[in-house]
Image 1 (cartoon, one colour):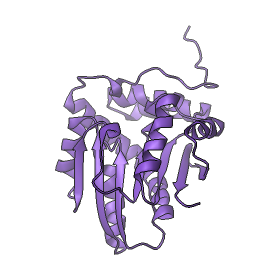
Image 2 (cartoon, one colour):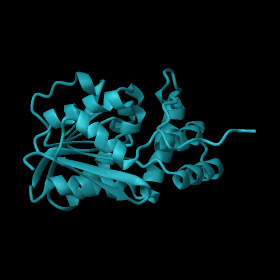
Image 3 (cartoon, one colour):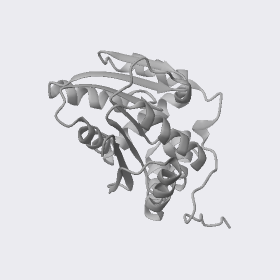
Image 4 (spheres, one colour):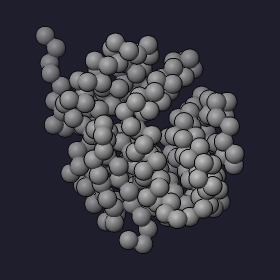
Length: 235
């Protein structure tokens, strides 16, 4: 009999997507399905909300996403800026070359720079106004996250935001059932519930920010079982 998962603590079991030598077709299918999940469950809305909070009344912005995948998040922001007369430029960073190739191929974003690189090694000629990540943080352990928060703080002009998962029993079993019946991607079927198990409770985020020495942030729960965390310089 399979043992019930203990969601009191974060899982650190590695996701399949984090393995090397994943076939490109599998990665592409995974990204396409994650984009659909983001659209259905409000992930894009949360990202846009974080972006607008930091944008304020500015009409020109340079934004960077670390762990950008196929660039779909940046494309959603680009469309919003184009519609609202905001001059948009962006930098997308991902360690997987397949993701960056997909971004270049699938999304015609003006003034976009795409980097196949570990974000930690990036040296910006000019700091982005905003740095953000979406469904990226849960891939890391707490020590790596402390350094990640410090990177975003030190390399942003206006601030940074994070859109990531709440560890929750209902969310875990719901996404497990949904992906079992509606997903064709073995990566999504395996990694989607595991991502929830690798997600966070609010007090865990508070502890990580405390270790990073970052005080001025807000953390808000968002549907469906996500946290939007915003740090703004000067507050």
